[in-house]
Image 1 (spheres, rainbow, N blue to C red):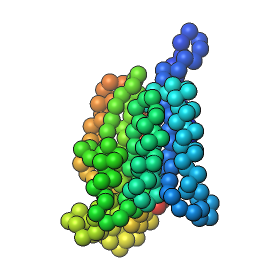
Image 2: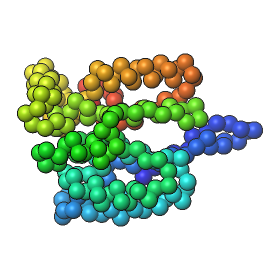
Image 3: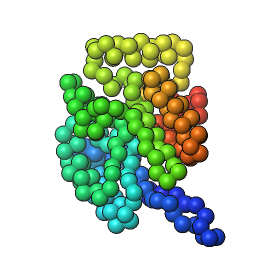
Image 4: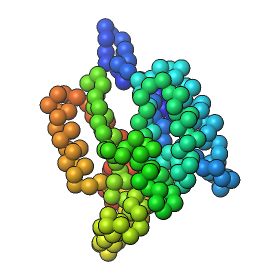
Length: 212
């Protein structure tokens, strides 16, 4: 849970332009604890976070992936809680959202509000936020046996044969189309002298690590 104020100097003092909230890896599941993972405790923590964000009157809230652990029914429980937020709420995809049962993966994107477009951008007071889909080409994103699954499987096998340190079936990736979209947004932001925040479930850098 983070509250992030963005400021500019005003008459020698720092006056926040706006404040927004950030969460990640709620990873709720109706299952017993496993090691350091306390799946059912996520509900109480999320409820507390919603109350804090509402009390602080933040401009918007981001969740940076892994909202659920592995059951699509968990969305029903969590979205009832986040539905009490009094400001816009943006979900980004992680890998755990797609650990659901076969045949349910298309429904995940609908529940996250990402069925039409899985990556988005918006601007606020001189800041541009790019909400990236870091699991767009992830192997587990697609139904086993589908054309996209086979396409991504071949990419992963090629990466493994090349010795890529991030070649795991749980890892993500971005299509060339999304990368071109990101570059256009960065260029547009530069022309408008906007600062940019890239939001993603996976770190985009450094290279040579088991990341995106």
